Length: 600
Image (cartoon, rainbow, N blue to C red):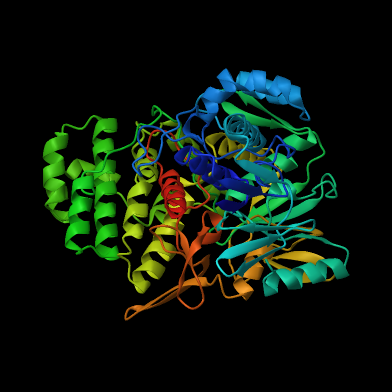
């Protein structure tokens, strides 16, 4: 059997590893395609060192472990931090790589609860691949070319590069982030910039953007305050020679005078919440009280769970977790077991009568509005909000009530994935609760930057180099400039700080386009009496990631994983955590076993 994998990023490499370990016979051949090298474009090793991962080194792995519940062969290995200390020095000394000494210093100086540079994880991925080569060298081949067309002929797929055509029996699409067609607004701004010799950068990975043409001291508009925005922080400051110093317990920025002056904003007007200071051991997770595995199994057996019921339980679980942390932090004379019993059986008004001391610590699901001081002018309010973010994050993800609760939500993502797998959501619930409410809340409060990045932003605001702009952040082109209205500011430089929206309908990936045009791929859609939901995700069977074609037929030898399925799957960009039975390792392990069962 010949198996093709398009994409050599973390998903593609995990797929390769699971296939090899689950089938240790010598009658399979795997072809791995990626023009950007092992690790893929996002994790390439020649990108700027200032671009960081959002996960801590000890919380990242490519290996399965004893918690794997999908039944495949376990192949234990080191997490990213362990690799930096045990294997990175010798591996780096043997390979050819630019700035080798910088990588070696990063490995030596890395702390367990620090993020690494994105390129450092890229070296870890290359080492992971090299281990597979040592053990299984005769069973797979890496082809560093772009698949420009994928077609189906009878029961096989033909993958064409510029040089050759390859026939495979099974195909896995792990194409990751790709460029997309511009929206009408992006197209208009791009054309306006070209006409008037301005700089317009549409949605893209910041590490791929040439910022060298932006002069020092010039005003720059950045639209978006999410993860890409925090990448631009390092690229526009430290990469230009500026540096951060600790002074009296806080960061201070020492400019190089090569920085531009940045005006930044978004529709929400405030940056993503940072990760809290880590206090958890590897594999340690918060435990739910309501959504236990036993209760989830009962829901599955009885088929009585709805999406609305699930999120009601999830909210209640998180609120209970939060109030117990408040009781601990403030040393309140309330027995936790007694409070839990009362809380679970009462309304908020009822339990507050018994525990009035909690009335000044009430949880709000309109959390952002709850956390900001509306009495202050925007500039003061936003700066105070960032300072409050930092102080709360410093309390730690076990001790601080708010940050511990947000971290518990991260720990319980496996539960959300489990319920999605059961397909309990109606189209209306899928659209309005899961994607419009929950995904937005989770993105803003749990997948934000490392704490260090938020501290850097605070220092840059204090230094007068970054300026948060009150929403709406409206930019128009007129008089041969970009105008920020109603601020009265103008600039020749506008950056969209976000990645292109994943959408099969607008992708520029040639393999996906050819399969889409042949009606082998279609966008995910859900129609039922509650309404309709259509996303740009590749339609797949959730249980096994097999592609569903435009005629509703399952393609038994075609699978899609990772970013292209965002919109039917959730949080597909996340990297695996060790010792928590991480969902995407389970998913890929199941696919590998399914493919190998076809062979037998």
